[in-house]
Image (cartoon, rainbow, N blue to C red):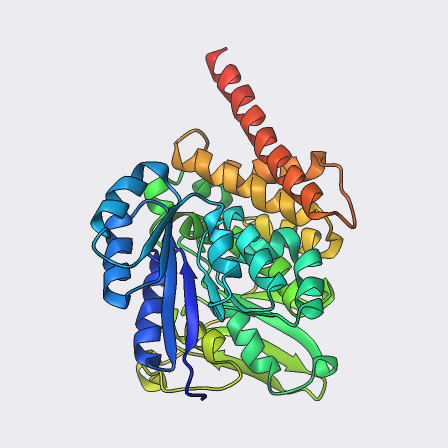
Length: 394
């Protein structure tokens, strides 16, 4: 390490990934130093982080929270900013070496683009940015000598396994998933599950949107698309494997018949730290794995009929272009509708697929076209919800 610490900004600092990121940075101190952070509405926690780490800047994106946050930090040197647009300021800040993007959904894309253009290391938990704009981001990263590194456990595992060989030697990537809370339910049973059921994940502690995506397996669909862009894979080189214990996070099969798997406890601190220190490893905080205690590991093929989101993931990964933006936006809107009790669980994927089927695909979109498609997909879900409401009234 150099004498100068790596300076880190965390977008989404009060969520699960953000909190784990601070824990990792504590363990890596003094070689890594947080300098700025953002949150949407949890201003008290953001204020506490600003005081503890003497942050230079903080951004709150919910306007109602600006004044209380500013008053709380009035006796500090921390600059308090309000508004989504200032996330880009943190991302492009010349004092920032590494940007951790832990914001859920399409909201993280402008910051990821700004940091990539600035040639930074971008540690991405926000898979939606790559799903929406991987066709723009990866060439941009190459042009500006930026590093886009995954924080999610599956793609971190792929990165670690691939580091043992060359890209040309890879034959297949196996993305594992727990199967979520409804792994053993029939299609008919899933039509009647509640919001509370969907939020009860068997192995991971995540935010509500990601937890619901895990229940529909849409998170795995998004990860298929993400892997396609991050590692320049064809859909023929990707498979999904159900692995309920969530100990093997993904596997890479090489041309000589060797398969390398990355194993660890279900703990996000491990992939967060690897993204920060890549390609080096440093002592970490994650609980060590004891295979004797685990006893056995189980694997099974996914059921595309019960979990049609997986089929959509492969379709979108193969098609590219604007298809990823539609998949992500329609799913986000449908998940919100489910959380608001406007639709049933299985309708999340049904609405998303309907938007994909109706969309005018473009192979090589501009950023403006990607954002426009995002907006149109969300509007189409709203229109579908209005039609569903009208049918119920009739």
